[in-house]
Length: 275
Image 1 (cartoon, rainbow, N blue to C red):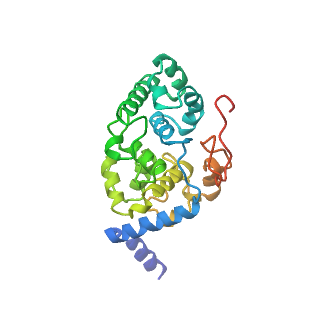
Image 2: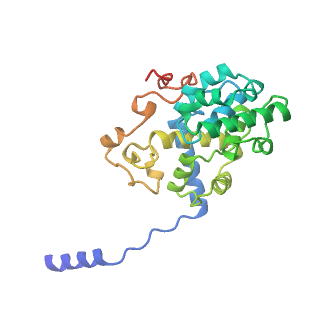
Image 3: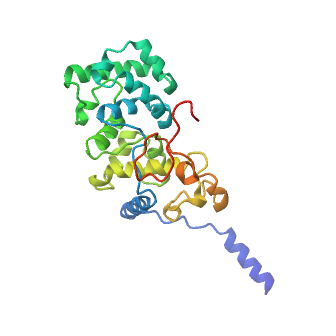
């Protein structure tokens, strides 16, 4: 009997397994919206991680954030805005002097050229004010859809989806889309969520990507949305080991802003040269 049972068990193990049932579009939408609701509970304090006091500062900081960290930008912009507080001031800057200020953000010559160009355009075409329309923003030097949506959503309250590397990586990991092009990703995700959710969804997804769902080694064992993730197991599943992978306030360390919102539970980041 034992031999027969073992034979039957071996046969069952060797038999081809049925492929998991494909998820319908409706089921995916429901799962995506539940993920958003769960993330809203995990990160009720989600916010843009660039320090800014007005639309111009946010626009400049977002341009500077390309190919560097928000922390490095936040450590650099105090000196930049002290020297050039308005578009008129920045448009009149000596390029070499601006380059020295923004050097820590990398690609400082190209970024200086963009900042001088967009500041001159704001001065000459928009009366020194940052426009509140996507079609105007994307005409400015160095400003694409991602930057424009950051500014619109956080400085003007106009809903927008910001597809940065974290956002694109996570929505593909969650099987919301397999698109690689940011514009196509934006269009797909916009069709899943109501417009009123777009800006905060962007913050929540980026927060999760920076704190838990890392690119190389996601902390699966410490992830609050693990039951909803079709990619669970790509990272560390042991809870204790996963907790050691958590970053920023989730891991008890400072965030990226020197001046975070009042409800941020973590510590402010150090100024340049302080840590």
